[in-house]
Length: 97
Image 1 (cartoon, rainbow, N blue to C red):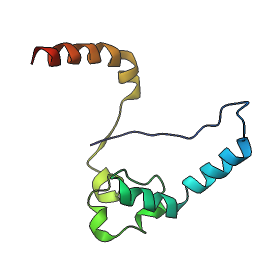
Image 2 (image 1 turned 60 degrees about the vertical axis):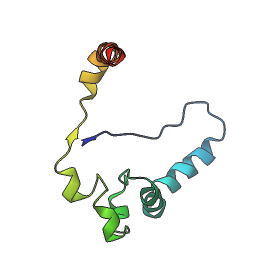
Image 3 (image 1 turned 180 degrees about the horizontal axis):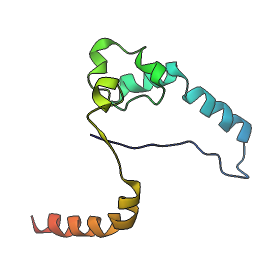
């Protein structure tokens, strides 16, 4: 597997900034992360959420200690430099098949 990092941001001048901050504060708590992970096999961002998941769910979670050790971080610089070129190559190849 390949893992990536994401983040939340509130654009400068955005409406409802206080509500956006409250939403982010809620979304990164362990319980909402647990519920999200129970519904899609995306690993929770908060490590404490892993402890809340049922044992049978842990084997499909990419961010459990047992699973993440076998994954690699995405090389953002590589994909920024070559992603468009590689996508074009892939699309050309896919069009032939």
